[in-house]
Amino acid sequence: QVQLVESGGGLVQAGGSLRLSCAASGRVFSINNMGWYRQAPGKQRALVASITRGGQTTYTDSVKGRFTISRDNAKNTVYLQMNSLNSEDTAVYYCHADGGIILTTWWGQGTQVTVSS
Image (cartoon, one colour):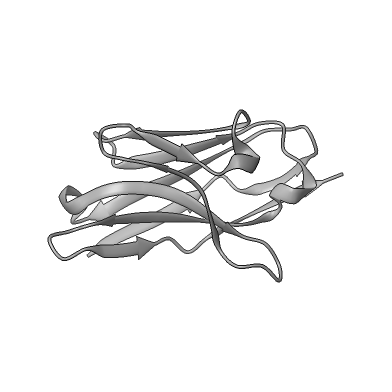
């Protein structure tokens, strides 16, 4: 099993920045991809950004140029640097990981990000 613990959410004014962190523990050697999803009220959970073990990144269009995902494999931690935040970024952000011989996905408990205008 893999456990994911997020930190770094909070309240920020529009135009501000936040950095989310997600630390993995347990069978971390089985993790391939890590990433962040978010879920706004009344909407489905959607991918924000992901990163492979080798560092290849993917972003949803709405965050390109504003958010940066990074990963420290030695610390089993993934980060999401969020700049130029706006109200549409308000959501619960979930850390995600996948891997294993039989593909398995794991989720963190979520951290709230609220952007005030």
